[in-house]
Amino acid sequence: MKLGHFLGKINAVIILSAVYYLIVVPLGVAGRLFGVNSKKFKFDRDTQSCWVKRENIDYKKSMKNLY
Image (cartoon, rainbow, N blue to C red; front, side):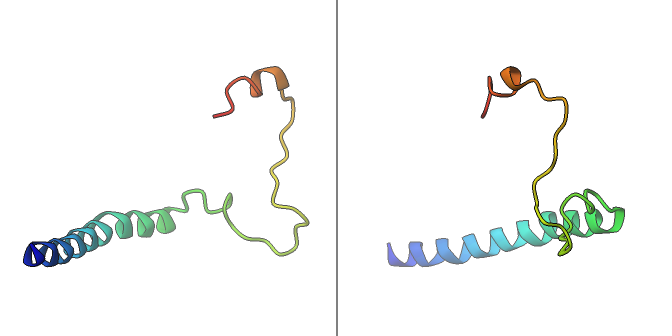
């Protein structure tokens, strides 16, 4: 049982590392290269607030399905 747990931990690290480097990293690099949502999430020290101003809101509809 101890050998099985040890091999399971090693397998999990190898598989999760492979998924990270084969899927997540290329998507991040491609997003940076093509500028996907780069302006929306960019940090700006000059702004007073991080809130996004919404206009023309129908509050009854917006409060109906919160989640």
